[in-house]
Image (cartoon, rainbow over all chains, first blue to last red; front, side, top):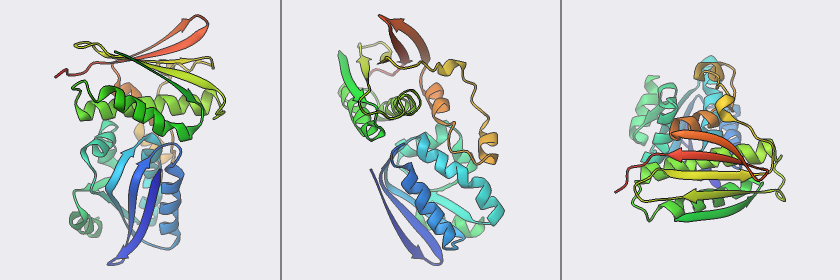
Length: 114
Length: 139
């Protein structure tokens, strides 16, 4: 079960993930990111502070946007992951392909630098 | 200690699979990080099985067994009547290719292979058994 909240700060869209993302709920993540893109945001911050779990279904959603974001000059930064969640990204080396920050402050700085 | 659970092939049941694995392992001094890796690997194996071998039919069941012995690797068995898909025979596409193809899939098997130390397939009394072995640090 995942609950997703969106709010806007300093022109960036913040997508907060609350709960667990697996094969049954990854579609929710996909829809939230698609909506943000559709609304024209070019800075997307993903708040993972309350993300308790992510499986490959969720990792795949993030991965599927990498090329599109490069083409459209959309910047995405994920932040606030706990050790278990960040380990899941690291097992596959996805931390090298995505921009991952420690906290919101660092995420905001990185999204402006990208 | 042995643990057993029957699971119906509905992806809504993955949460229950994760709880089962976590609850079975949490009182044996296994590190939180290693538990979460095993939970992840079993989630990936079970979701593949539900989706690809059983088309998410909730009436079709399979079993998960966990065999835990102090000082030994943890053994997970997934016992199933459906078609077998040997992930050892599957060569995962390169991560770069998945990214450029904007693919969402193809990561699960890579995760399982990274996490588990051994993946074996067997037939026991007409049923398919997938045995996953994980070496752990015993505290």
